[in-house]
Image (cartoon, rainbow, N blue to C red; front, side, top):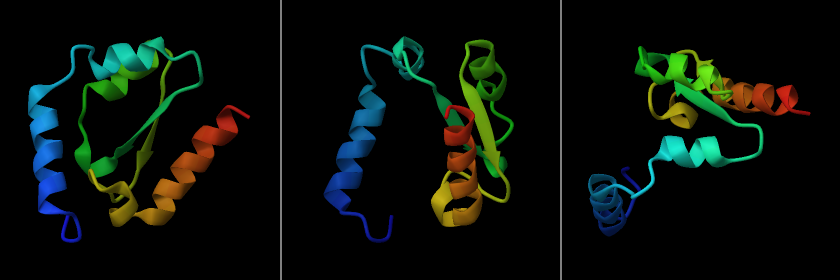
Length: 89
């Protein structure tokens, strides 16, 4: 966030508050491709780690990371992406 434009951060925050007419879950479920959501370990517990697999969506957990996966643990994040891609190769 230190390098982010304040205007961009403000617009993103307004968009998050306004929401979308279609939830992210419905959008994700509608995709016909393999799907995977990656969580940071420090963001857990999260009910979506149980909900997503019940709906055919894989999950990965990155150790020693919170919401900023690529910042907190870049190697772990890259490994989680590689694992998700390999599972669908």
